[in-house]
Image (cartoon, rainbow, N blue to C red; front, top):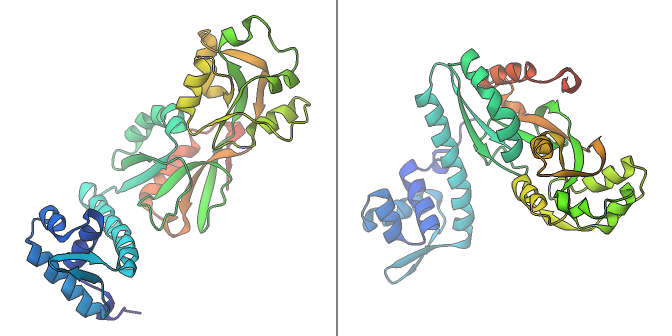
Length: 302
């Protein structure tokens, strides 16, 4: 069903609204849009008349947006971003299409990016754009066609493919255990433990795998693997990290295994995409290629 014309304002008026909200004044918005201040004011006035609601508060020559207009501007900003992304994909690579993928910084750089030259060779017609996101997001708001995510593939209105699980290993600077190495897994509870924010249950699962009941594991929290790895290298404590991430540091002697070996951690890496984009041609090619990159033990598509 077609929407009434009243609810489809011009792009020019919506850009003026978004700019005033983002920059805080009509003067700044006019400069950003290469318009005069009066032209911006006219666009906002036309928007008010079309919608039949007040969106501008006037104080002399200064204008600001009503609280409801500020909320409206945020939604307009997201919609304009989607239009811009769609236009870019159409113009940059109209034949093969473009694919916008959200990746986790460490996994993306260590696992995905080294494999991408093969994708480029097999699918030169597809333009792949990568951006990093650490936490789940709403596909309706963020301009992504798919995301690589760790945890459970339980995002609303999406489909997913499991890429691989994760083996976790407890590591620390060699000096931290050089004088007195822990005599058991339980002794690690007496040491400074470091947690990664996205794996809140990782230490509890590790202790359980080693026969230790540890319902509450305290310690410092880090939001990215890059920072927690550096903290471990500098002797700030014991970190529970993915084995693929610290393999090189262990081999070089920069990190030591605090106790035990690698254990399966909770959660897994998944490629997730909106159900509405399941038939996206470039995305289908990317998914099919990813299947060739997954080891037999990790090949668990959903």
